[in-house]
Image 1 (cartoon, rainbow, N blue to C red):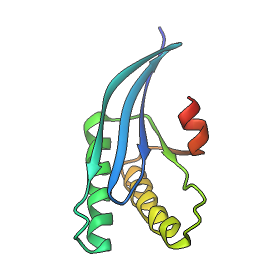
Image 2 (image 1 turned 45 degrees about the vertical axis):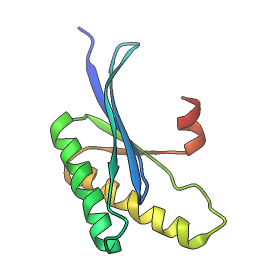
Image 3 (image 1 turned 120 degrees about the vertical axis):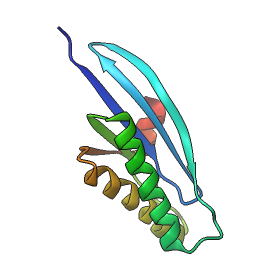
Image 4 (image 1 turned 60 degrees about the vertical axis):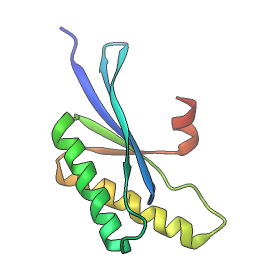
Length: 114
């Protein structure tokens, strides 16, 4: 019997955080669900990060992934933007860790090619 592995992928962002769930059974991949977490940009930074944290935690509880992948922060010409994106990434990673889901980090280029 071939094991099935469910994976939750996260593309973090302060305005929109993309997510997708796939299942792998042997060499077969199947799309389960995908969507976008959108937070109100008028909220304070801490509230926006809290929204990302809560939503990613809910995704983990709902879909029960065995593993997750989070896109690494792209090196940005604007250090402030890179720092803020890193905070969104950290909120998502912390939520996954709190849900007991192992987190792997991937370069954006690698994910886009896959």
